[in-house]
Figure (cartoon, rainbow, N blue to C red):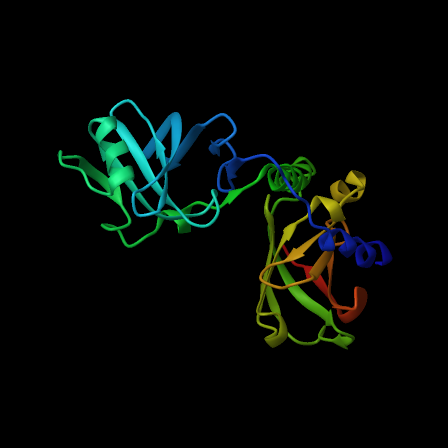
Length: 268
């Protein structure tokens, strides 16, 4: 437990990356690379690989233009190169796409195949680009899921709440499910204080791979700031113990705010 508490110090460190290569968090195969001015991206049914240009329009807007064979992409940048306001996937002469980015107007017809002006979903909602520092960290995080898979711990378990925060629930029929997947965990029960709990693995909290393979691993609680979890799964004894904690940061001093332990019986 002390190691888990101290490990939160890693979350308070900020890393600066000088690289301008950004990876699609949904699929690391795809990226946009401003170092080599090249991109390999996929959106909906459209995939493109080609050289990119960074064009500032006559009106001061900045566009990333990706050149394909006959289909080209035009992405309007936000304040950061890995964030975008809108997209156009166009079929036609590439020179006309360049003019469209420069003047925000084209005198010749370009076929619009996809755009956020047509569809309600946004390009920026679909893509979640991360820099190289984050890429290596997320890649290491996902390796935790691979270790759990190798140990045959991935799956959905039917559970019964035995004890929560010091209260014994053994005589009550409080049941639910514990899902362990390659990205994290998801717990659902009919206990009012634990109806839904989800978290993601973090490699910085799982430095001992043997612990992971034996069923003890940790991660970050979803949608909470400075909140961590640790799960111990014992398949042979058919038990699982969840520990989650939250901390406050006051004058750069870490203070434990919440610590809760829940024990489950694995029924199947």
